[in-house]
Image (cartoon, rainbow, N blue to C red; front, side):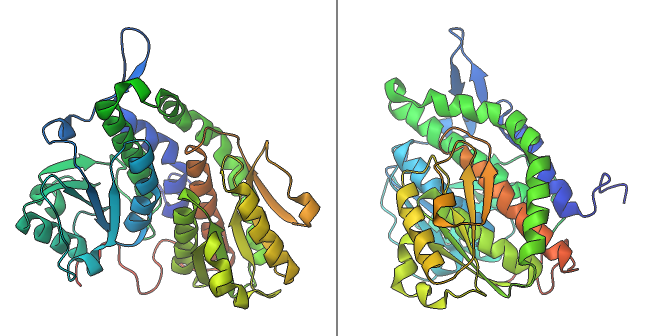
Length: 368
């Protein structure tokens, strides 16, 4: 109980630690120049060339972090980026050309499929970047360079602060490569917003927990859930569905919202609620709004995650709107991530599940 710091579960403690984790991840990596501007320093990457293409390989939550970061690495960093599930990558004889690099992501640094993918990449002559949390782990030892996420020990089996730290470090990588390739167009506004994030997130988390508790009570009888998002919120929709499955044992589907009409819409009914990520900084907002209309037209219930300033959804008849603090584009994803984690946590707690040790799961998947 003392180790939990007064929290009911380790998972809740670790969600609430995320502001400090972000600060730790930024420390020493974001510096202020003499002219007052900010810059990114990732000394680990200084010794290897900027890759002509980056292949991200991971499993589970780490895969979702990679999917979230793919768009940033391309749009901010200017690095063409592919993404693979490690258990598929290791068996498909991937083509890795000279000048390309592979980044493997693993919280533990011991994930069996990811470690096998690392070894395959090295056999093919690729430079391998390891992104992990555990110093001295197998991935940390075998990668050409390693970026530690500085999340600290994560006790709960379901990963929370580890994914948050992975997202921060991928954002820093995108900024680093953007700074290195085109200093004149480097997105300093994003870097400023990232440095301000810990304080804003810490202030928002208590209210977010209360809202998650309210929604969990309303939806605790649901046996299935649908998560929808576009762009980077697609990755968060997948992660939200994964967390709900892991913790509450409620069946959940995460989908790119544009795919809804390609089959999943057949599932919509009053007993199949939808969690729609309709954040207002999202260029896809009108399209997500259209998806919400489609769900409501089929008598589906909707939880809509929006920002405080947000464009209204009340005219559609959405009863359950969850407003998050306004923030810079991309940074809003960190608020959405915490909201999804808290919702899954509260759903599992209301249902009396073992939050920290869900059935059939292990913290580190060290066998295939």
